Length: 87
Image (cartoon, rainbow, N blue to C red):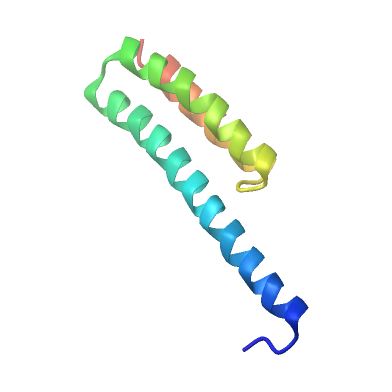
């Protein structure tokens, strides 16, 4: 358990940031899942639309530090490749 007041405050801050990051990560996963489902259904128009919504969300997560920038770029690239292959 934290002893000093600064350590107690740090613990509170960490808990708040963790909650925000958890929410962001969950949001990203939801958007990616929507793209995956659209790909599974085989509907290119829906998949393209879902990808268009997911891309900024992934990049925002990278900007905020929830995901590494390269990880977000890789996910976008792979999803885009799969959507393009659906044609």
